[in-house]
Image (cartoon, rainbow, N blue to C red; front, side, top):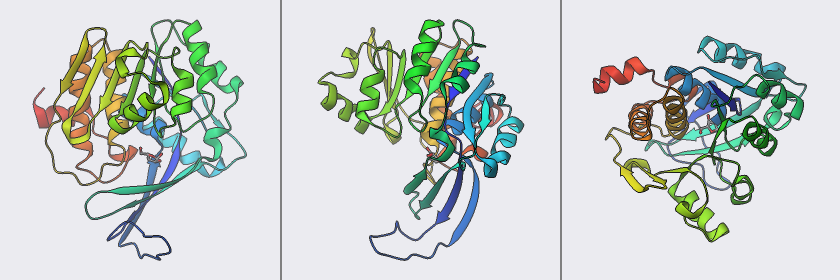
Length: 288
Ligand code: RIB
């Protein structure tokens, strides 16, 4: 079982000829909206990877539909609170090359209380996963509580903040970050990934795949080549699949392979939570 302390956003997508320049007013050539947020994307990915996942988060009255949608996608939602603060949202502009730029409003995502988080985690069992990212508050409390309860703690350090990540070292078992973030963390701590005291560190490398750093050393995995249409949510899909596969008892090699397959399908699609591939689509594409 996965307990995902995570953001829930309303994602607004604008297709644009190029990313806006300072002072520029730019007409979008397309618009859409859907369910998003790094947390919600990971919950949906984990559910589509056939794991049981309970989302811990908060929305405002304008985001009641996002909770419903998570439920329709197979995510447990009793620990998503409705607060007086507006739901978080993200305005995502995507250019013709699939590059994006995102403006984020945290809203209810950063109004979580220890009571909301604690009530969820008291239902957890030893061996379950606590999954977290950096778009909510409460990670410290959640990680400490989860550790005390014997959960495995996974943290996707995005959006990256070296100080926050540094503060969580010693409280996490699995750290997922990209190459730039790994470099920034090394500069902040003076330590390479293998010296952070974390059992497993997975560094994503985009089209180059990823590397897994553990006691056993460093292992590289190639990405599955694909046409890139929109990279938004691909990292979240990777992490959701990775943690789901580990939770379901796969070893790290198998879990990373599955996560890379899911991410390769995701970058070929426009959108976030609503278009995350399921196991059947991965099977159809790769013949598992
Ligand atoms: O990683 C993609 C996500 O980042 C989007 O869904 C958006 O909500 C932002 O949080």
